[in-house]
Image 1 (cartoon, rainbow, N blue to C red):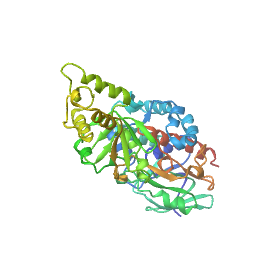
Image 2 (image 1 turned 180 degrees about the vertical axis):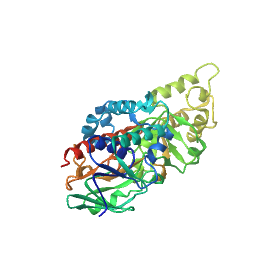
Image 3 (image 1 turned 30 degrees about the vertical axis):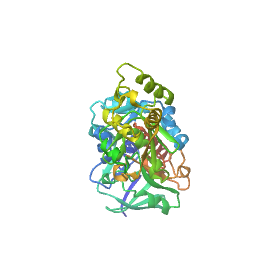
Image 4 (image 1 turned 120 degrees about the vertical axis):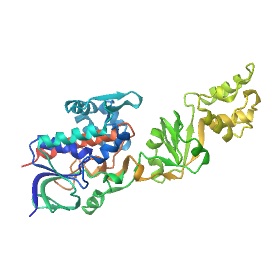
Length: 405
C-alpha cells in the first residue's frame, strides 16, 4: 500500500523546488517530501538572508569556476544558464540586480524569503504536491520504479529524484541523509567535508585584527585567491579564505600566506620604502602602506621593527627586508575550520562518475536521479552553487519526465 506518484522528489531545497516546478509543468504527477516543517530553509538563511541566487557570468565562464567538476556541470549550465535563471525569477516577479564585485546576482529586495516563496509558489501553481515533516528513512528499487520509506508511510514512484543536500548548515535539515542510501546501493560517495567555511587560527595577532578586511591575495598550498580576507576573533573568513577552505578541511594544509598588497611587487614595495626614507621629514610607515592602521602596526610587530609606526629613515636594510616579507607573504597558522555548522556548502558527495551528466540519472540504477549539493560538486562563493542546483534540477526534470511511460 502507501502513496503512489510518478515523480517523487526527496528534499525541498533550492534544487528540489526548481525540479518540482519543472516536473509539474511537464504534466507529471509530482510529490515532494521534505523532512522539516517548511520548504527552502537553507535558501532563507543564504547570503546573510539576501540570497546570492546566481552569477552574472555566462555559462562557460561559470563552468570554469567549478574546478575539477567543470566538464560535468557544463551541459547543465548551457541548458539553463545564469541569465535564464535570472529571466525565470523575473517572470516569477523577483527582480534581480548585479553587484559588480564578483558578479553576484541578488534579488532587488535583498530578501531570501522572496526567492524561496517564488520557488515554492511556482511549484504549487504548476501542480506539485508537498508533504512536510516527512523525512525519508530509506530508498530501494521496486517493481516498476522505486520505494521510499518515510515517516508518513511508504511512497511508490516511477522516478525518484534525490536532492537531500549535503551536510552544511545541519540546523536547516541538511544532515547528509542521502549518503548512506547511495552507498547501500553500491554507488561511490566521496567522504564529505565542509567547504566555503571560515578557518580558525591560533595566532593571537589574527584575533586582535577581528573585524578588519583586506583586499589581498591568500595562498593555501598551491591554491590562491585574490579576494577579500576578513580577520575574525577565531581566524580568517571572507571570500578568499572560504574559497580555499577545502585545502584545510581535507587535511592537506595547516598554513596560509597572505599578500597584503598584491598590486605592488616585492621590488616596487622595497623602492617605496627606500624612496620614502629620502624625503624631507621622512614619512612614517603608515603613510606609505595603504592598509588599516592596526594592520600596519601588526606588520611592524611581525617584522620585529623597533616601533609600530617608525619613520622610514630609521629602518635599516634588514628591517626593510623583513617588512617586505611580512607584507608580501605573511605566514598565518591554521588550526582547522569552523565545521559544517558554518560551512556554506559541502565538498564530497556522490562521485560524478556515477551520474550521467546529460540527465543526472545514476548510470547503474534506472529511474534514480541525483542532483544538487549531494553531488561531489561545488563552486566558489558568488552564486555558483545555487546556479548548479537550479541547472542540475532542470536537466533532471527534463530527462525524468521525458521517459515516463
